[in-house]
Amino acid sequence: MKRDYKLFVKDILDAIDKIEQFIKDINYQEFIQDDKTSTAVVKKIEIIGEAIKNIPGDVKAKYSNIPWRDIVGMRNKISHGYFGIDYEIVWAVIKEKLPELKPMFHQILGGIKNRKREKKGEKRNE
Image (cartoon, rainbow, N blue to C red; front, side, top):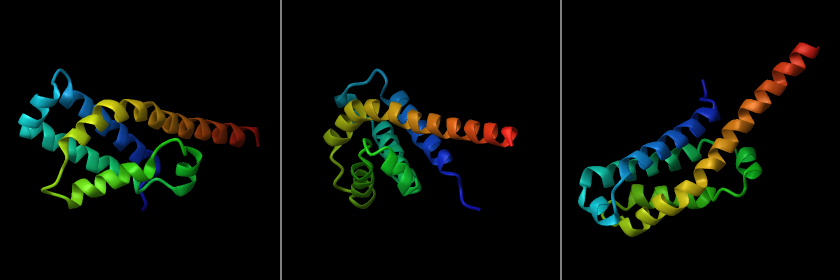
């Protein structure tokens, strides 16, 4: 049975929440010096990119303001460039881009819930 894409959206939001927790109250220097934190953040970015691969094309088209390819591209660079991770880029992404993306993924999740409510309403009216 194929996993519902809303679960992948939840995975993305969970990963963003974890990243926010991991980097709370630390600066860039502390981030790069703390191997556990930097490794955990990179893993969560991989999870975000992997989850995005499972979101249907029509959803991606509807939310075209999300840089889908860029996110997956970053995941691919991290996953396949084991010794070449640029932590300055990772830091910039988690500090600047993730806060912008989080409400967009909440919007997708909200849209899913609204569509389900509408469908339930249609069935009741039949």
